[in-house]
Length: 115
Image 1 (cartoon, rainbow, N blue to C red):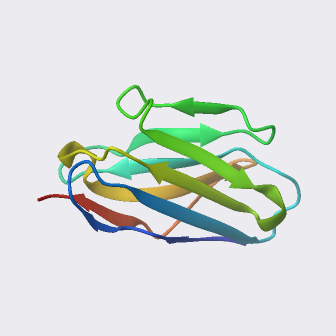
Image 2: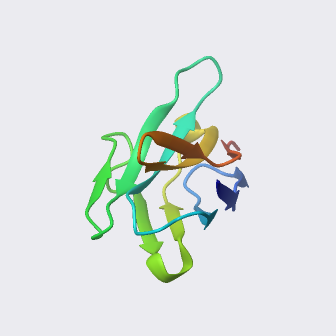
């Protein structure tokens, strides 16, 4: 069993910053690609960013240049630094790790960008 625990969401004004963290624990043997998804009300869950075991990163076009994904392998932790936040970034953010044929998700962290 694998557990993902997120922290760091909240309310922030447009232009502000937040940092999300996700710690993976349980039966994890090896280093896997990890990522962040988000889901806004009434919309489908979308990929925000991923980081491979070697540190290669990918980003959705909507967040490029504003968000940075990083990881600490020794701690099985992945981060999402979000800068220059916009109201359209408002969503529930989910940490994700695919292991074998299974997908594991965090509990979700609400990020609200509003003045």
